[in-house]
Amino acid sequence: MAVQIDVARSELAFEAGFPSAEFSLLQGSSLLHHLYARLLPHGLKLADLRIERGAGNVGDYHVLCYLFDYLMTIRVRIERIEVQCSSLPNAEQLGKYQAAIVDLLQAVKDFKKDLSFRAFAVASTVHARLQGVSVRDYLASFAPTLPKGLGTPTGNGAAFYFGPEGDRILSSITLDTSALVSDALFVRIHAVWDASKISPETLAGGVAEGFVRQALDTLGLHTA
Image 1: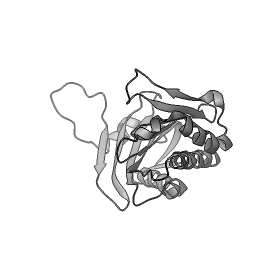
Image 2: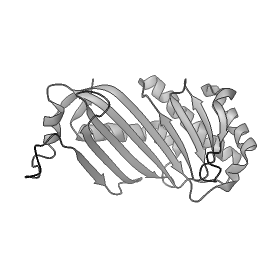
Image 3: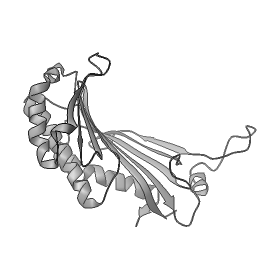
Image 4: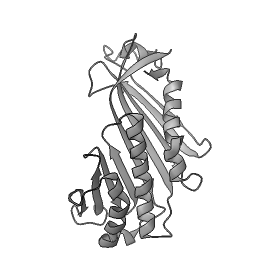
């Protein structure tokens, strides 16, 4: 089933995990220097860079900063780096997001030269309206048989999980009715790559985006 989709809302999450807790990141002032130097060309402002201590425990401690008018939120934690993008823009702006993420990782490596990454994870979430088919009928193509005797069905969904493939450690796809956009399909595509087999530049240079497009193609979903 080939279905044209109109994307109403989309988000992107990226995570870079360390092999173990990097307590050296608690040396905030030096880390801030490197982050500011690398992210300044991407529009980082001093007012959007700060240290968050949470409840005071080590797990809550992180450096927080915002880019692109708060569309990108960055957290550098003791165990990982997290990036949340609240909106996926056109291809040109996406390229700016990817460049900022690469420079973010390089800033942390500038701070600690021997730092390495264990894995990179990308999750792309899309809320889209379908052309020519209802969300319920589309989802029913993946789960045509529902459990009996439990009441009147009000909807269904699907989840798929995949093992290692090339540089990827695992991946998954989740389909459901969107809870945020009326009459829309919710799609979450998640993948984890082995950081010893792929560089941040290669991942951001098209591998992650290519996987998301491939996953959408296998679902029969095509953007305009």
